[in-house]
Image 1 (cartoon, rainbow, N blue to C red):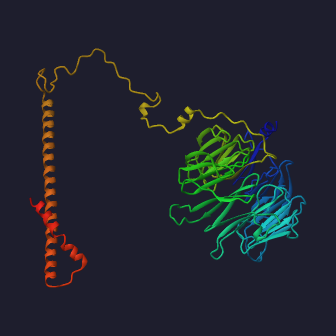
Image 2: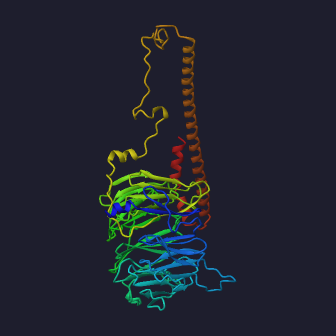
Image 3: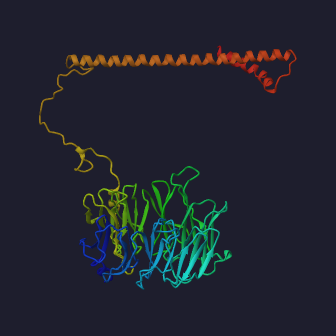
Length: 571
């Protein structure tokens, strides 16, 4: 019932040069909403449960309650570029470009935290963050703890009390901090980059025990530029992606990425991949403690690993660069977008059987609907500024809706309105049969005249009936039935000339070969006689009492051998 009720009211929003619009599905028609605007919005953010939407229209930054269709907060922020919401929708974090001018003195905070529940238009906390890396605050799922990454420490705030720092994790330099999903016991992962030639490392801590010797797990790296950690849904397992911007071996233009596995039990080891090349994507199954890795030079491999880093299934090689699980985790899409042709393959994650295979050219955006059985693709700007559009598909490749924006209009963002909770597993369609899989493979080229009438199509011969034999009375070589015609005599002379030319050409090649052999024999004789002359000079020097080198004496000892070779060649 929950699944059917969602399908009857599912909605999505678009953001583009014509503003923000709200659509319903399956009609895919625009419907009025409190956040509709024709102004260009620089940023839009949605809560995980889909009840709160925040956007900046160039004049103000506003927060809306989608369920009640009303505005709940209006902030005097005209230049907001990035936003994020806390897990329980109690706070909004905004980031704007750091600038210094006549009206904005140096060290003016550009990251501000706003309380949505209080409705106040003044921030409860603010700080300076010049770049976009690690700009936002991170909360635990229950908002018990909040984490802020600074240059040399990680600060913790408890129960959304930003008036004081509850705890600090201090190091000489901090690259990033990561908060895994899950509740008590709480964990935090810390990345410390290389300092003065020392190794970079990642450490996993239990909240509150931040002494250097109290790390649950530790992993160091010889050389790394960036580190990203992907945690499982339970937060017990994580995959560390340690990347170098430049591959010193010169085998890859995209640099080098190594994968490591880390757990809250203290285990840490490297994930060994059996094909060289870049790592394109790593994704955890939202319903299981297993993950997929796309790796290796194109066509890349797609392998499923369990929580012990063992390969449990291999999807083979193809041109992929994205892994797309539906929210329920029972269906999976392996796709190739961007500079690839938009090929998509969908699988049942339980049986690993292929459900469909088709292409969506020029796709720059993909998103599953919360129902998990349909999805949306889009051609968005600024990646592609022409022919912006979006399509709604089912898993078998049927286009349920296709909308192309008018010429000159740009589409920047597509977003399904999230469901308040994960919906029940959708019905999985029947997998492809072996015949359907074979039919989907590229076929051999057939000329236009043979198409459309089956693979064994041939031209039908024309039946001329009992016509006279047109070859009767025509001269055939070796036959006395008729006199040879002029054309027959001409053809016979051509055949005789070709045979004569062929024989002459064979004799010429044989003469050239004999000449080449004779030249090689004479050349060898000259070289051998030259060596004999050198040996004679060395023997004269030896007779005069001069001391010879070891290699000169060895050369004299070969005199008899050279004489025998010369005798054989002069026969």
